[in-house]
Length: 108
Image (cartoon, rainbow, N blue to C red; front, side, top):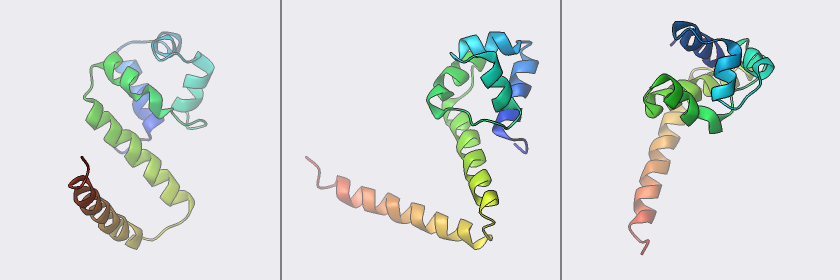
């Protein structure tokens, strides 16, 4: 996905012919806040990801990937990080996975 997460939500809403008010009600939001999310003036609350997935019959894992990739991209863009940060982040993820596997072997 090349669009922002808010633009993605707008696209889903329009493809499913829902108004702002209709989708906002399904997500327990008011339409003004949903409009701000779609326009990039407010962040989507990750606690509502499951409701969004259910509303549009989407795979929650795929939706989370879209949400977190947008979140990470915005943070990196805002701080003007170079591409080396991606390599380091992947290394740290692998480290955390290994650390978690090692620690979980000792949990009873």
